[in-house]
Image 1 (tube, rainbow, N blue to C red):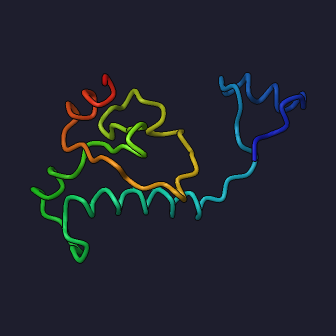
Image 2: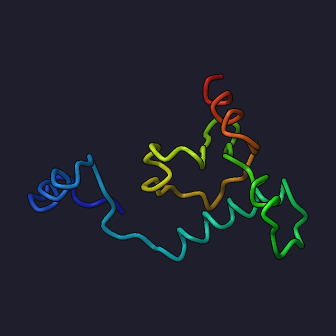
Image 3: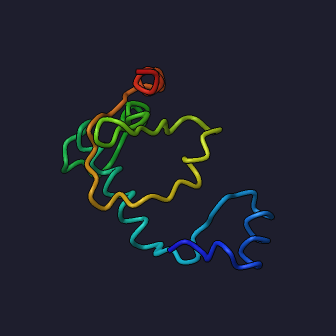
Length: 112
């Protein structure tokens, strides 16, 4: 749940962190589960579901991004994208709609 917006301590903390809002309580296990499921879904479109180990070539061919419901996407290789680090979203009911094999494909999808 989001922290109380009008609390002076919250306002001070938001200003210090340079953010407009933040969460006061995050279920880390549930968050990791949601992202693991997204990652597994993306990998399932590139590799067989029973694959338990990956060669260097497999790792290099892993998806570079993904789309959810055909509209949102994430470029795993873009270090300046804050969402790669701080974007905690509820993906519990999301399915991967697109997998981008290269950063170029992810950027092209974003431009459409």
